[in-house]
Length: 152
Image (tube, rainbow, N blue to C red; front, side):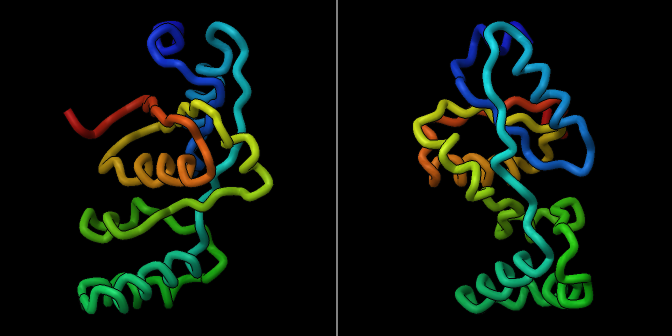
């Protein structure tokens, strides 16, 4: 982690929400290495209801029927359950944003150089969405570090 701290300039660490604790472990390791840096849980996973709304909006705007299976599946799920990207195929992942910003935490993002931490990067979609949200809420810059990657 000291290598990461010496190569990347950041003043705020934001772990991606995960069902596993690995993202939080990576976050804590980055925070502890070198000078103390605050971390904040600014992102949270969306609900199935939010995911259904996203999928329906995309289908409406694009006219595509490609999401019919996903929409049926989301409608059959508990609407207040946490949405899981890992249940989607790669083509479905490209249109979904699995996160929302905790509005009580947005003041931390304004002007910050954010380091996102995640346990595993597979398609990169979650990291991309998280970075876009951080920038949307005022982050000056965003970089990411992952413990594992499915890409060579």
